[in-house]
Image (cartoon, rainbow, N blue to C red; front, side):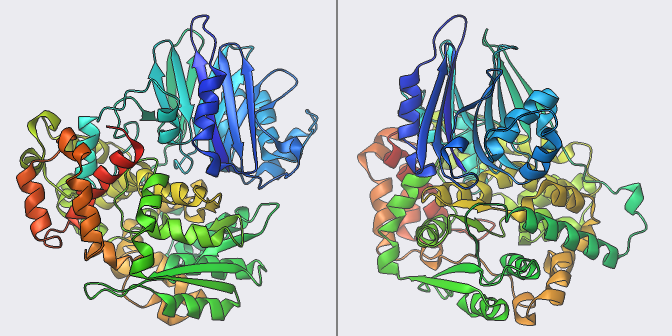
Length: 592
């Protein structure tokens, strides 16, 4: 797990090492254990290292092999030992790192090396023989990769602010991205970002960049959300067994490390299942971590009752972090500073604070992110279980979308209007695509492969890496996702969502953890705004920068401030916080 950066210069130009160093300096927290650079004329690579596998200098990056192929890599290849054994008859290894396995895999299989990798990764690989650079992102987009096209060059980095720090980037606001942000509770899916001059490499994509500046993208993985003939006769118990086996494999894979691995234990079903499976694997005395807050607006601020129950059941070394409202407020600015993009989810600051505690104990954690998207656990999935395939767009929009296009026309100043309903157009394109049998299949595909990447996945990466923590997500193991995609949707939608996981939980966990209302990583103070948060919001929206930018109609903002908790989104988030967070992020990072 690390931070990578680079510049590719075209048509005989020389890449700037200074720009690469500027980018690396803006993301030192992603790799506090070392720094490396490499330069070969038109390509310059940089790497900030967080040492997890092969802690010696032999594992340092950028890494160059005997043939001059160079790589800078962020992530973890969980099957690197198996791949190494397969490659050793043909190649000599000089380290025990997963990075060197990537180099040898590319030497053997070329562009198809990515099909052999199991893990999370963002890779920049330079091949001097082909005069090409490959930019690669893992199948579920767990590791980020931002790109910016400038005159005669292309830059890339693990974070958006790192690219901004390199200079010369167009930091004006993208109106289409703004429409997405306000439509989908701050989600701006790839390839866009909130800034016009910076884009994201989509998940499951290989981009080939040539020395003349031409590029080609290839999507290398796309599971089908249809029923497989080989599984037609499976019973519900057959599916439970298959999911349990796949999840057990996913958890086992993510124990690979040369340092201890812990678990973020919220007390919910997903993280509790991980602890139970790790206990089955013989991981006794596992370190687990939970966070809780003061209540607000009638909402409880913690789920310690359930996380404590799981910790006792499996004998973990459990750390509870309770954060009072007075302690929480000053932390918001630090969390905003750690965001690669504006994220209005209430639990972003919670993950930031929890990661600060975790870093005092371990450098790697597993967590339950992605289970809701993959197995249909959210309330907005439920309406899709009972409508026809052609009704997917209307049903999903009614239960998910924050602001309709006609509302945004009244909210935004005219110069920031996207003109047409660009967000509905994106949803329709994805939902109508072939390869999904039912409306729920189509929505789970949309959620897992487009929206999730830029909501919980990005949130976890940004907040954990702000403290040099590698967070691993077993529920996003690509083989488990493939299996879940083929699973009959009624098994996922049953029991109020995640029915198949709940059945597994009843076999492995205390009943109280499974048979209770769905929880939420709770930060009540940002759902029900009180002081000092109302002042924070008002200051952001009335700041000189906000007035000069003029994104929102003043009368609309004034109406929100007059009653800060009156307006909620379809998923029960605070509308005022969504608007304020965008301004806070733009001001904190000096962009837009």
